[in-house]
Each structure stands twice: as structure tokens, then as C-alpha cells.
Length: 429
Ligand code: AMO
Image (cartoon, rainbow, N blue to C red):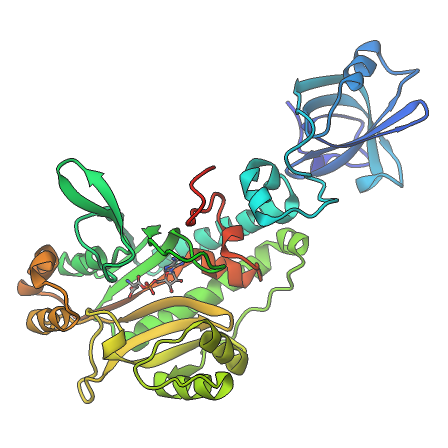
């Protein structure tokens, strides 16, 4: 069986490897190949006069990115990658690659993101691109471990639903037999119902669907949300949980991913706890001052306001004490001042990463808030019902996995943090 290329050392005697032809160079009677697998690159050197006929015959029709298997003796050679080369006595083309290639894997010519996404399978052969997904896998593993070690139960809630949770405008309708159905925007209603079911601490990592019309560098139509709900917790406690998670994820990536980080050229700095808490009213003032926009209490932060705030803060921070009027109906108004909600957003200097709140657990207040947002309580009956039969007080949040990875790795576009992104114009591949 083929060995990982990284395991071949100058001291190895023989090697059998398999991978893609990264580069082919002919110099006089010598052919130098670079063969690449997911662990590294090795030089394969063929002296066409001395090599077995089958080897030279295979070379004649060799194109870049073909899959080959090579077996031969290993020689230490200073100039080659890793200080060694393989001189093959067996050389087999397992799968030829057509040419020209839709995308240059060696990246001599930088490609547009669209071209890269169209040929994503080739794009992902580049270490700098695959690095994002090696790190994303570590991020998700750390999230899972973080919650499991704290006694959280992992849940899976339906993605085909009958009602909007976050507002009705950005829903994808689905043909569902004779009924009207939608792709779920958030597990919000279901994770709250799990509090009535007595699970106390739940988390879900799953897709959310938003019919955002606009193509931006930080919005997807299908994103991954890390969702949490905790009984008997208030807004402050779940904010601490959130900053704890973010710091744990950064620390794990910094400790365990030196190679992928170096391929990306990222010098990862672990953020310091606690993250500053910035009251909404102050945030609006800062944004108004820095942008010159006429922002006032009750406005949301647009892209330029978000950018200005990030420049002022320079680190991860929370915006707290939001106006109840611009937060969802399920956010708990403050007792002493119901104009403000126990709601928060976690911000990276570049953008919002998460939002959450302490939730309303009183049935009548919830109905009141649903109505005050101009929504019909009837369509929420399945959600309201548990609130009539013993609902613990609870709080939670939703964190965008792609935004977490994007900001951590300083990626320019959120699409780079998704294998096969879905946006307004992209449904294939
Ligand atoms: P919200 O709508 O703010 O809150 O979403 C939570 C987080 O999910 C990510 N996100 C997105 N990422 C990429 N593209 C999108 N179109 C997109 N939409 C959302 C963001 C965002 O901060 N139910 C609440 C959460 C809660 O209160 O528990 C909710 O969905 O990072």
C-alpha cells in the first residue's frame, strides 16, 4: 500500500507512494516530477536511458494532476523538497487528467473566486485552500467537545418547518405535498421547546437557510449555525459561555494546527477574556460619530457602522442592552426598563459573529411580544403550547460557524469558509 509522502525520509530505502502529478520538467535525458498527496510533495527522478521501458512509456503521456502510483528506491538529495527523491522502477498512471486544467493547482496564475468555486475539487487540492477546511474540522470538533464536557446534549431539529422564526422576509418556500413549508432559518423555536422538555442544556450544529437577496462577502443562503440553549441561565451567563467557547476554539487551533495556519500565512492571536461589553446606546453614538451618519436609538448597524465600531474596539466585543423594538419577539425585555432587552450580539472587529438573549418564558408576555411585532400568534401555536405547561427560564445564542472561521483566518469572503457555497447565483456544484 502507498505510504504518506511526508513519511518518506532521506534515510528511507524504498518507497511506494500515490498522488497527483504536481509538476513535470524535462531536462536533457532526465525527467523530474513532483508528486503530491495530502501530506506533502516528493521529487521523482527518471533517467530515460536507464529507466525500465514501462516507466518511460508512462511518462510519454503524462499530464499534470494525473493520479499516479510510484515505487522505487529513495535517494538523499539536498536540492529536492524534503531532501530526498524517488528513482522509480514502477510507475503507473491510475487516472489521467485532461488538459488544459480548468484551474491551475500550482497557483502560478491567481484565479478569481468564481473560477475557483466552479472547479472546487481542483481548488481544494491546494494546501492553502484545504487548510481552511482542516482548521474548520478542528473548530467543529472543539465545539462538540466543549459542550459534551459541560454536560450539554446534542440535538437535531427539523429543517423543514411550517413557520418563520427570525422574521418572514428571508424564507425559502418548499413544495411539501399539499402544505406550505419552508427551510428553517434557525432552530430557535425547537431549542426553546427542548427547555420545556427538561433537557436543560442543548446544542445543535446544523444548517440554517436565509433567502438573503444580496450578494455580500459575509452572507450565505445556506450557513451553519452553532446553537445553544440553557435553562435557568440569564443573558450574562450565556455570554460568558460564548466567550469561553470562542477562546477555547482559538486556543485549540493555535495549538494543533501550526501547518495549516502557516500555509495560510496566519499568525493566530488567541483573544483575551473577558470581551468588552459595549452598551447599544454607546455603540450608536460611536458609530454616528465615526461615520457621520444620522444614527439614533432604535437604528440597526449597517455595514459602515459595523466597520466603524470594529475600528474603535479592535478586539472581539459584545453589544449589550439592545432596544427591545429591534430584537426578535422572544428576547426578554428588562424588568426595570422594558425598552431595553436582555439581548446581545458578539462582534468581531469585522462583523457580527453571534446573537443571543435571555428568552421570554412567560406565555402571555410572549404572545404580547409576537403581536407587537405584527405577527399572528396562531401560527406559533405549536411553539406557544409548551409555555403553558411549565417552561423554565432560559437563555441561548446562535453563532455562525462560517463567520467564526472566516474572521479567525482573515478570509476576505465567507464563501472561502464553505466547501460548496450557496448564494444568490450559485446552486452548482
Ligand atoms: P441571527 O439571525 O443573528 O440569530 O443568526 C445568528 C448568527 O448566524 C450567522 N448567520 C449567517 N451567517 C452567514 N450567512 C447568513 N445569511 C447568516 N445569517 C445568520 C451570523 C449570526 O450572528 N435565533 C437567533 C439566535 C439566538 O438568539 O439563539 C438567530 O438566528 O453569524
